Image (cartoon, rainbow, N blue to C red; front, side, top):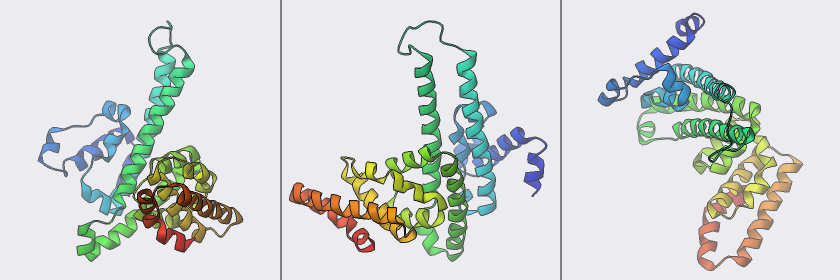
Length: 260
């Protein structure tokens, strides 16, 4: 509550002070590193370079997520302003048009934002410490809820980011967490056919597993249609893949098929 009140008075200064304070918790080497406002504008992921214990402390994590959201927005604004302040005067080198510069800017923003979401998803993974300490399991549940709420807001405002994150993939053991914890996960049904058509077996396995959880969570005609598509795709792959690749594909998706 004190932090939130201070945030209304001197937000940017408070963000940097908070980041540096949490960096100092990390290890001895972090004490020699000082994050500045310019660093955060260039690389918003600096916000997440904090002590691992932050990701098991709900109240502090909420603060970090507020700073992260603001830093990502500030970085987007900074990049847009950079394009306006430094127009392309000569069509030389690799960039020949403003459209290409805008495209590169959007790609950089998407990379920064998707990387931050991947880091947050990784923080939701259960560790050996969590298993050995009951209090950490309760903290993990709280943290997962906080991160899922944050991801929900991001996915609602930027559906394309949801697509990017799922095309990149993340640990499949987190699928029950994300599907149940993020209300907007139903938008994945729109791009699963495209994900399923990827040549990578890993992406196909991820897509089938995702569909299996979505089918349980959302009893919709569209979910049933996508589930049927998965079964048909797997049936086709069964007839065309060599025996070694069949095992590589079907062994991980057996539980998913049971859910479907």
